[in-house]
Image (cartoon, rainbow, N blue to C red; front, side):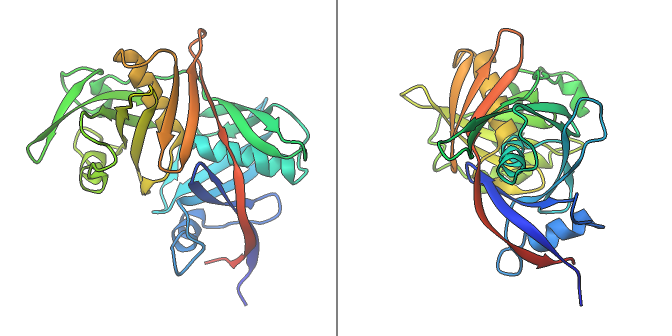
Length: 284
């Protein structure tokens, strides 16, 4: 009989992952587990797998590793960090607030906002400083970091390179982003030769009320309902290109995240975290 592990399915603004406490369960092949468990109809169904574990860096309370549903390991997930905070607090694993969480892109500080039942409702994450990637860092020669132009099947795009611990290429479009064929152009841009390690692609539009409607093609996962680092990158690109000030509400398919670019050059992301359901599943 195969060994089983307990999991918690959680989502942040619709960006859903399978969460496993590796202090209790060993996942010997997390890439394979992410692929198998993330399958809809045949598995739990998710954007990937997040492992919560012991911290190995000084100053961190816990650690997280994230695997996309294609098995690739990601550096960071903003929505995932918020759900980790809820998992740790609501399951009584810590009473610390804030929580210092170790990720592959550094330690993230999670500030918990509790409801009247003392459960985490929203979380503000200090996402650190944005890094404005020059084209040369993507293997390009020439060009510019802002409004970098690229042509895909005769259609020209102008995007901004931003790193939030993982790479993003943010494109503001003039057409209705709701109807834009993300499923067509997203994978072409993700695998474009200017991204040797592939890239997350955001398509965004500033609405009349000042909010930013964004849809995302995530590296290794495809279209997702939300992307925390993508929302941060979009807010940064909006400020840099004069479309918004230092605060933006980023509206995605799964919900809205509030992003602030502070005076000390840090990006603060606030949004919800929720438990969908829990269960047991066999190791692949």
